[in-house]
Length: 218
Image (cartoon, rainbow, N blue to C red; front, side, top):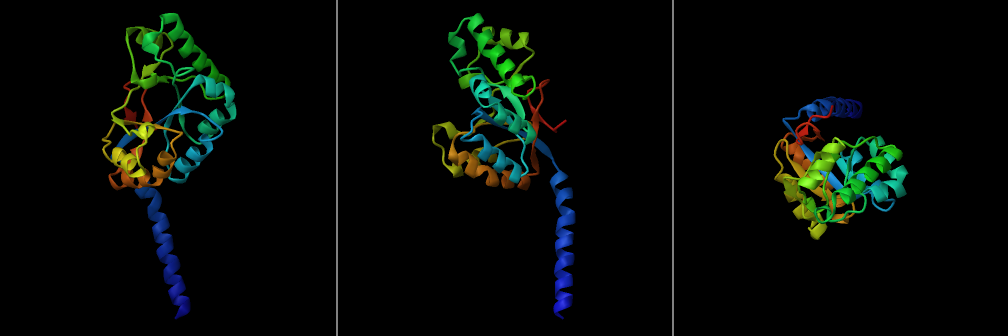
């Protein structure tokens, strides 16, 4: 009797395991999870671990000054399957700067990320979401697609774990959410974000440089 119960349990476990990948592969849409302001030794490893453990990929918009200071973390982002974008060198208000200053912020970050092993970014997230014609001219010069966001998680403003999870629950196919790597509440929210997306048939996708929307990973 005991042997038959064990056999039944093993069969049930095998059945669950065999259906897991098929269920995971069923994506009715894709959303863009984005995390700004990295990398750092303090926060990047925990963020990457949380994303990996929950089967999520994301776009990380790195500041050039931190990519230069923590190149190993840029390489860790790539190794974990993340896509690396440009978030300026020092996170200034670019709309208050001259074209040469903007060019310096963008170009130095392209170089810092490439030097760190993050490839040459094709996506640019302007600090504070502020943009103007000067910035768009510089972005075009470096072949960068500007990425703002559809949903602001407000994690930078002290949002609770519940509020961050709720913000992610508003995402629709193709949309992008703003998050940051440094708030502890954001990292804590990741397992619930993953569960919420899966329950709606949504998967974490890449952001297309052509359309600026979330799509299936290439």
